[in-house]
Length: 287
Image (tube, rainbow, N blue to C red):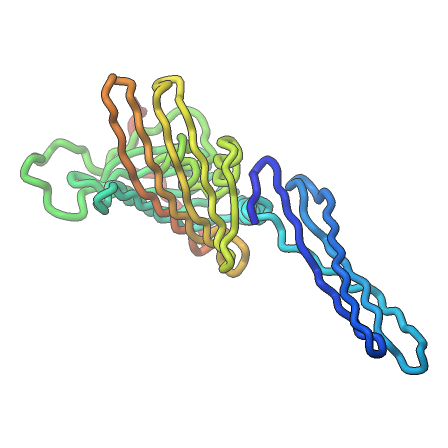
């Protein structure tokens, strides 16, 4: 089944066979009609006629078979089911050679605008805290020893900058920009991000959803081209459990060809988990 996020086409065949006395006959009825905001889905029906002794014909009510929902509608439903409920998240980004360049973990409750994200780096652990919509950004000590090119005192560990205004989403991982909007820390942004780029959404036989899209040019770089594809795995409750994505890009803005590729994996779990975040003790206005 293939579908456009903004328009879906579906169809199906039902083959019914009935035997009456010594003659066989077959009928195929095909029908499709518009269904909801998704576009077109098929609902198929077939009437069966069977022989009943003495030449008397008995008619049965035709069974109705509901076609599989369009892939984009399943994705939209899964994104909606994953919204307005707390969850744990892990975002991993790797370069083309397999190196992990970003790894973030955290939890978030959209109902209270409270959560956190931690991103380990070589000289610190970057931390974003969101408490009732108030954002704090700071750093904690690194998980391992400092690398040789870093000296102690470069970071003030435990000090957090408080940002003005109120926020309802985490920003540290993904930032909802471009392809990363497909695997940002907020599952509710997935369908919206794919819809904005007119992505094609299909489904594998095992139920995994697949998306693809390409972009050509942005205001900062009219020569930038990207090709993005990814898979979405749902959990037993129909919520988003995992998103994997690969992105290829190319630019000639500097009159030479520059290109690259990266891979991202977003894992979501523990939907409904309680999320509590304490306000940091050392807080200063954010720059």
